Length: 153
Image 1 (cartoon, rainbow, N blue to C red):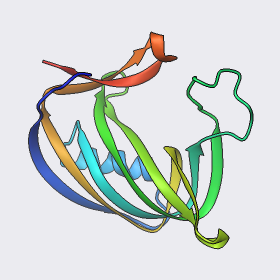
Image 2 (tube, one colour):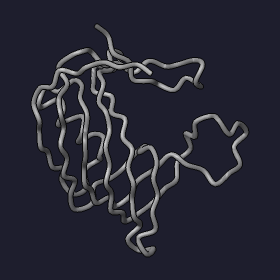
Image 3 (tube, rainbow, N blue to C red):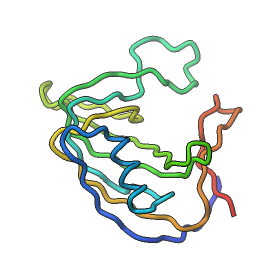
């Protein structure tokens, strides 16, 4: 366990438009507001389609992360996440998890890591800026190269 106090900056509300690419809109909002790192305590969204990390196949290594995508359509979602700065791409690197209900399948639920999504009707999001310490995602070789949130002084 690693503990790091956070210096909090602004709290920003943002809405995404119908038909927008979720991650493109999120990065655009962060760029426009000048947010390089922070967290998303909550967002509500409608999604015409989304890809969540998941599989129906038996994994070769049950402890390894799953990076394949489950494609879903016509969803209601609630989610949260963190934002770190990616030096290589010079953009915000979001890590988003969400729970979705498939509207046309009795609100059948799924929960996982969000890989891609298209906004349907709306996304309403709160972003809390973190001004210090610097947050980065560093691939942990001992954990299948999973990018782990780390803080620099």
